[in-house]
Image (cartoon, rainbow, N blue to C red; front, side, top):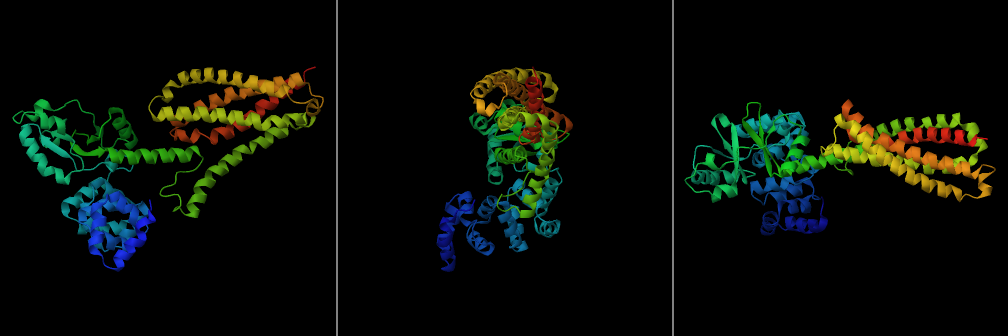
Length: 456
């Protein structure tokens, strides 16, 4: 996020070569704050400001820049400078950066990085995009199970400067098999001569390296963990996923769901930085589908053209009735989609969901039907134009009740159907449900009207 407050002052400090002031700005403020203050500078100015901080601090600041800013800085920096910065970055952050860069740029940078770091990068790059391996870090605190707590603390003093998370320490056996974990607090409070294996927690929650990262986020939320270990098929510890990485996953997943619920293909990156072509394409796809679906209303109304000519008053209630179906359907779809995201609902229990929503839909339909009946009875004789007021009120009341019940059922079932077919359940939320309820709602409305208003 750009914060322009200090930009003029930073440019003045650069012009006057105020090295001491720039050192204070880059080292005494939080890295995220420095990133906000320098985001609006051009690439050359940004690198000149960052050069006044130690390389480790530069890496921290760099990680807080937006994706577009990071990409600009990579192309505006020398290969030596960028490779040195990559070595200092957290493994997960640098892999995220390298995945966005052109393969040719990555191949130019990797040979300049230390061999150990290069192997780590290639390993992390090999994991599927949506897997736990793609978001994990290989910097974690670990101790063997056959040493004392006093020895373990001594080892942690050596590991701490290079590890992102030391609050959870993982206990490893031979060949790095994960045996358990111990918190830093427990380790400090234990007697120095006590074996680590005696105080560790062996019942530990872990995830597979190829497990979906949203499932990882759900597990961390369920067990309220700061980090969760990632193991391979043989049970060896290969990394950990930390809470900050999970937050990124949650935000990304929520953003995708919000876009799909609004009828937009997910947009990566900042809203204002998305190209016109990409924005048009992502929105046109769904708008065109919804337009074609909505155009079926023309066919339905054309079928009931005669009834509509005879009783023009019916058209006055059309927006009210259609919005009732769309709103009830969107409500149900949103609730069920969210319940599915939290693991509370699965497609296998669709009958239970259906019974639940039938009861709710019926109660809502009857309540709104009474309101619709009362409102219709207030219509004046001049508007009714020879239409029986009692019959019209019954048409509106019955239609409201049926449409509300139908919208609730459709909205609750579509996310489950989409999930079963392998699609994102968020696609079933409005405006998709609203459009479907509009088309079917018109058919319901005129069918009920035709039945009531043709009665002798």
